[in-house]
Image (cartoon, rainbow, N blue to C red; front, side, top):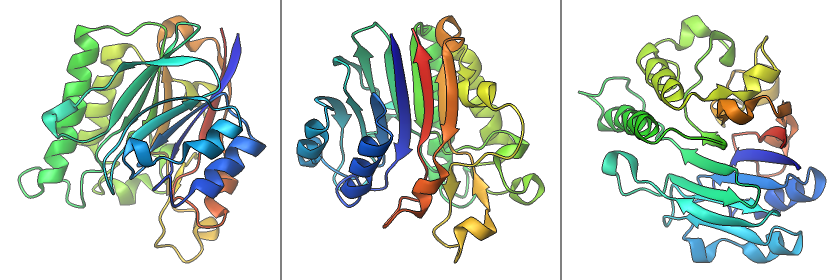
Length: 262
């Protein structure tokens, strides 16, 4: 069975329903994981998605912020929904596909603007969230699983437009990168995107603040696709749909794709 998966921080699924439909029509991933849906589950506009064949959905929602959802053409049942760091936020959902693959969809806290947990509660929450993820994967070693989402960390030097200038900027600080690495190691996760595209600058997010995001190209790779070692070799065709950042009323994130032959 071959299937293509995409992950996309949509920054309001109701506001940006037209570009979600555009992606589903033009690129047609079998599974689409959305973050920052900013919608209660019962307000997610499912009709248009279902009309295109995405008849299966698992989701958690908050009114106006956070929120995660997995849309699928493949039969899927909810398998987990964790509240890491006890934040009470809708930041994780997992669904098991009919082929036995579990897809984890994460929206890791952004962490605010100051990379100091003593001065910024949100930064501490981000680190605690990653620590809880790490401990969960240590305790319950994942198998036949894919982890995707906006992890809000660009770990490699070539995952940001300027490693030197962003070392003290939230999303690329050494302590965040270390926490993400520990989480990845705990589950034995393989970074599928970088396994496919090992060299070169690679971004999935460009700030709304840039007058011309495309020309400035001050991006960061905050959105990730990981897989457990038992299925990571089945992954291929990774790509980031940069063009989506320029669509009408865009998210500041672009979708990240990978295909799995299982």
